[in-house]
Length: 111
Image 1: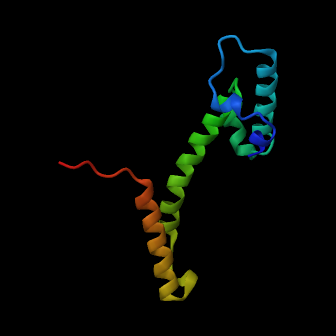
Image 2 (image 1 turned 120 degrees about the horizontal axis):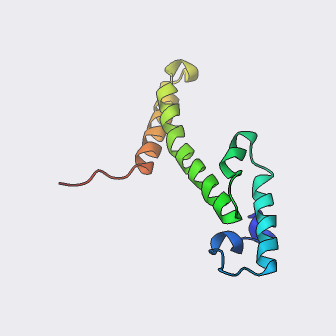
């Protein structure tokens, strides 16, 4: 949203032109800095070698997509009844995680 507010989103959403204008290059540097400043230290390595804001965005997007698919599975494997002490709440959390996992998986191929 910040990149859209700053009118920098185009350097991520559009491919880099063959002959980018000075403004495009300047905006690309700003967008890359805007992406890099707030991220956690453990994610800096993901974008360190990226030369454009679009490359940085794609690297971060891929990292977070994988993390969002793995997180519910990890939560499910660590879920214990003793943490909640209420069977109804425990089952609600269990089925919520199962549905999130099922929604993030590709369907099995039909024979």
